Image (cartoon, rainbow, N blue to C red; front, top):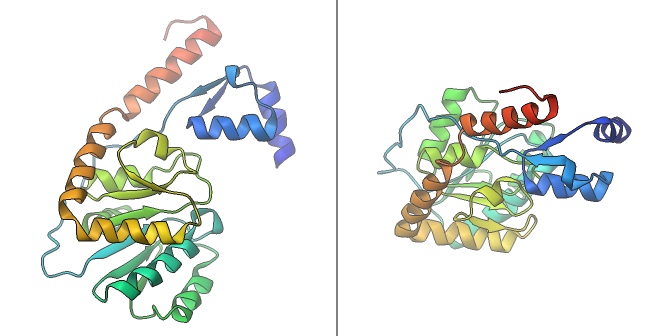
Length: 236
């Protein structure tokens, strides 16, 4: 796979990266000349759902993504255990499916979280939006993430996010809280901070949504059209 990717990068007239983070990874691992790389951030469409009232529901912390090592679900469970030791009212939702699902279910039991963590399995788009709209905090503790659209989707439904610094979306969401992947203590502390300070949650959501305004697919398309025009000499 690496050889195929290297061949493609060497042969390309231009390389489009979804983040500066990805561009730096390609430069470090494939020797990519960063002058040949253009960064075009991913974006998010308008949310179809609406925020659901949390009245009467326990505080909910959400992980949503493929259940693979790259996405960091093990870190989420370990942080959940630390949070559960501090607060008995918080529930945790693991949305999505993947090769680690059974292992993670067993791990949650080992951590004493069998009654606190809910595994949803595969979800349709409407179910994903419902989870975003019901969560109090969304976390993306990925080991490495070229971009990561899920935090944008969560913010669009008024849910504050915590993202790994090792992700492209971290550079697009300056106002959101960030962690280093694997730093379980910091993740737990920041989740607790958001759960205990509703005013902070609201402030971060408002700031994040202002940043979302700059992340529209139309703007990404304009950047790509400009690049194609420069390469071909044709007007976009």
